Length: 404
Image 1 (cartoon, rainbow, N blue to C red):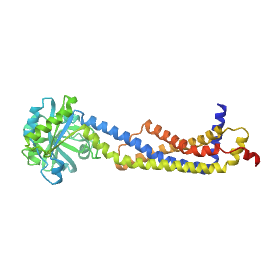
Image 2: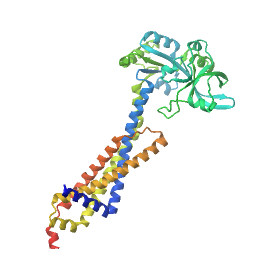
Image 3: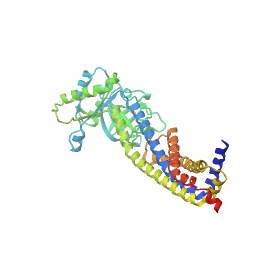
Image 4: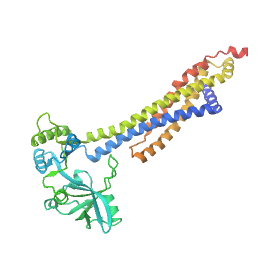
């Protein structure tokens, strides 16, 4: 133990003595480790974001949207889901405890006493808060009676409420949606941003019948439908049954593509992972190349150091130092430098990741894994690339020192 402590002290003194070598090795390792740190944090962030989205979307949920990717590409009609389809699905799936059609205007000007704001206008059912697990924190949701009589009522998102009303309560007040007076009956809780980075709180939810008749001049077609099932374990089977029912109702021949799209929480996870994957791969390649370059820098600088310290090494060997002692000392020097590089690289990775989050709203999450993986990789670089110079130093013959 005493021998090892002495070797450790000598290694540390050598690291301090050869400052330029230490600096270049540390910087090269730090750059590689910072890239690896971002990869680990981005991967963790992507999966954490995916699970958060699944929780908010609902693992028991299915989103049905009109129009296929092919029809959108050639400019065909995107509205293919009818109110008759909605009723047929409600009758065919008794385990669906939510069947909520949706119609939306997109962005429209909403005004209140001189305040104007561009907000998303969405038409839905009276159980919108249940359909999207999105509670109303002030006031109430609209009712089935509001749906039947196409009432001019709505519930408002937090961002739109702040922009139009400031600190005032919007409940009971009237806003103008285009030229339509709409009474606000409820306020949704804060939701944050979508996977694409847009605000989810910039919206007003109205009865879908009101949106269809008074804003879209539409009598039959809705844009989408949201379903939630009690038998979550059979969700994949329900999706297949839903496809068969809609293909039958829409008279789509075998071999022809669907004129609708169905999404589940699994599809959202796939989308987010694919979205983050390209950046993770790019940073990964850069990180691996940086670590390899760092390893070669370390190996060459240590080989140069061995040549500069030939006399010192031979004298130590001639007075009793073993080959193993010289080998361990050089490897310890390499590990000390790369460990410092790993710590600096982790700090640099944290700072860079925060910048990435700020610029691109990329999901990044740091845990102990990022630090441990970075540190282990730095040790691997130190031992792997420091082994050859260490062996060369250990194999120097002590007899030369005596002759000199």
